[in-house]
Length: 203
Ligand SMILES: [Fe+2]
Ligand SMILES: [Fe+2]
Image (tube, rainbow, N blue to C red; front, side, top):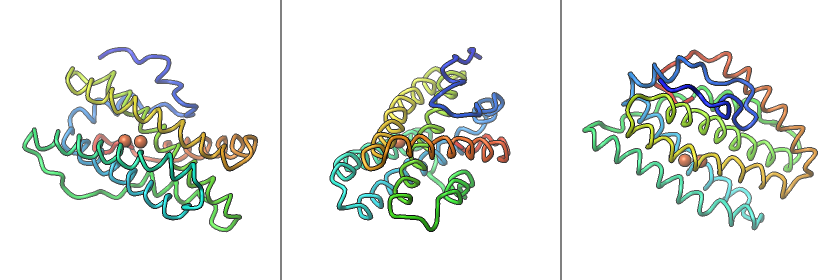
């Protein structure tokens, strides 16, 4: 296995690097990983559509998230094609404990701005963690084809993380965004610590 780059350890401000055992477990369960990954892409596309519906008055958000829907749906189709190539089926969606835990941290009351901020930062965090996981796969898998396969996803998701942070800064004061982002990062560390290391999940 290749050594992990320093960049992976510190990627995108995440406070807890993925447990190194995860790649080895994932390698043994590629079908489950591909299925879980496909649904992550589907949820990314669906959530972007929901955000466009909910914040239809925010022009920049609509402008930026519209092409993202297409891109995430393209990712879904790429993963689906990879499953089919291997004579595997999509299968059923699993409970997404990671995302459910993140949603628990979203402010329930609060102002519309607070809610928008938390929606955008939740997405930024999922993109950042996905990016880190794809980077792990792109560096740690033995299969060269799959390393390249995940490298392309890693590059896309890194751009998405930045997009959601930039959108938050479009509608909110940068200082407020930074403060809340730090709270999210600290919370995500606890979530990751509390989750079992499983090779059949992207998160
Ligand atoms: Fe994606
Ligand atoms: Fe994404």
